[in-house]
Amino acid sequence: MTAAFYALAGVALVVLGLYGLSVQAHLLRKLLAVNILGSGVFLVLVSLGGQPGAAPDPVPHAMVITGIVVAVSATALGLVLMLKVAAASGRPTLDDAPKEDRCPKE
Image (cartoon, rainbow, N blue to C red):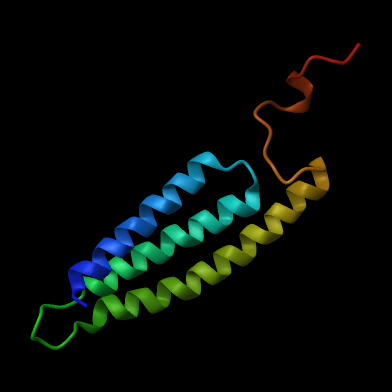
């Protein structure tokens, strides 16, 4: 497989992650979409990290390894925040309007 194939697969993952992020209302699905988007970015960085026939450039690889560590910690933080929102509101989604702006039920 060539680097262009991996770059295109990474772009496809980025598009899929952006689609999931914009369409889904459930917070866990949004968090998974952000992780898919990040994986696509990592794949693009690694695939474009070196020229054919030359030794691979270690800088993009080091950036991806650092990004994976940051992504794992950001996912853990996102899960904790999602649980806090679900515990406070009773639903794992974000409302458009705050409770005080809603019309009271009669």
